[in-house]
Every structure is written in structure tokens, then in C-alpha cells.
Length: 62
Image 1 (cartoon, rainbow, N blue to C red):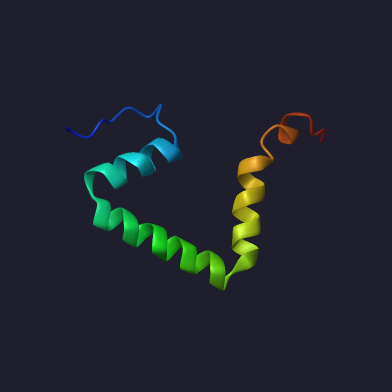
Image 2 (cartoon, rainbow, N blue to C red):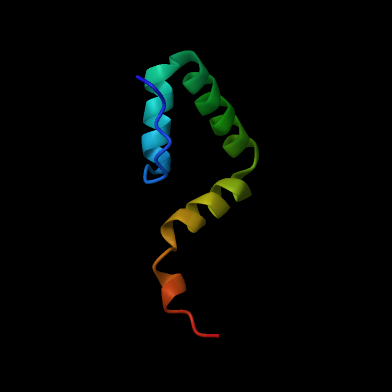
């Protein structure tokens, strides 16, 4: 299956495609990401907040 250049795919779709096309590389990326999050919990908190706090930014007044 050729790689698709459509930008409508989300991060999860890209991760699934990576695991299907290159399972060893996908596993290495997942382990490296997990290791980084274990070494730096503040980074994990920052990333989680960025993904879950999308709706409140619409109502913020300046």
C-alpha cells in the first residue's frame, strides 16, 4: 500500500499506519516515547494538557 499524502489523518491514524507498515520501527518509536515520558513527567503532563484542553481555548477572553 503506497503512503497517502492526505493531511486529514490524525496522529492516531498515522501511528496505526506506521505499526502496520513497519512494526519494528513503530515499536522502537513507542518505546522511546514511553522512556521520554517516564524520565520527564512534566512533559507528559504538558502533552496531555495540550490534547485535552482544546475546547476551553475557544472561550478564553483577552
